[in-house]
Image 1 (cartoon, rainbow, N blue to C red):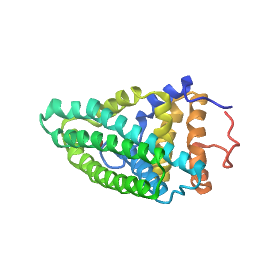
Image 2: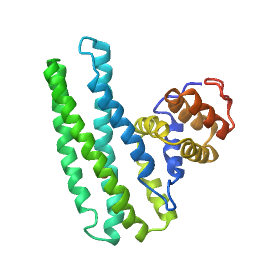
Image 3: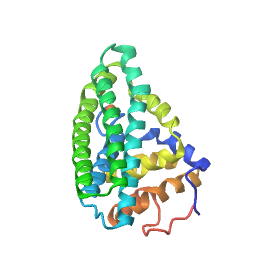
Amino acid sequence: MTTTLESKPAAQAGASAATAAPTGARFDIYASVHKGLRMFMADTLTRVGRLDLDDATELGATLGQLDELLASCRSHLGHENEFIHTAIEAHQPGASLRIAGEHEDHLSAIAALVGDTAALKARPTAAALHRLYRHLAVFVAENFAHMDIEETAHNAALWAAYSDAELAGIEGSLLASIEPAEMAIWLRWMVPAMSPAERAGMLGGMAQQMPPEAMRWVLDIVQPHLDQQAWTKLARALDLPPAPGLMTA
Ligand SMILES: [Fe+2]
């Protein structure tokens, strides 16, 4: 069965993804999405670096992935501002100011990268491509350092103020605000970026809460991006047939 990105199961997937497993002793609201973002950024940067300007299909696909990455980054920092920074500021005023300022810088960098991308599309020269590649590399580097501060200083502020159940509730509200088409993009990058145990924990939790058609929507998104070994481990954990394309529900 094929489901569309706008289907009802998609919304259920978003609401149920609140069961994402923490990687440490405390509930880590950043861990899974940041793993996905790091993979999304690294993969896109690599594709831009090796891009063949003489291949129109590859050019379109690569710049399409870059457009999707930049839109996802813009959305992600908005989610953090709205849900996570609000929670931090409620207990520790000023504690999110540095990262909020960096989010403003990231919005400017994203706008500049959109400009670089438009310039490359208008005139696909090696010079325009290398300019985009260098600027994207700096953006990725800044985001990697930025995410580490969020996963240390911001998590410390969150853990001091909230229980794990309260943090899971904040994450649930954040996830419920995400439209199905965007949720599909996050699942596509987050799940392959996780360890097998994290993957089994998150999708196992979702499978317990979601109807079969919603779970099939999730698996149809992630399966093409897992290698055979990773899919076999996940299938075993979820008690699914091991071979791709054989799942029934
Ligand atoms: Fe951030």
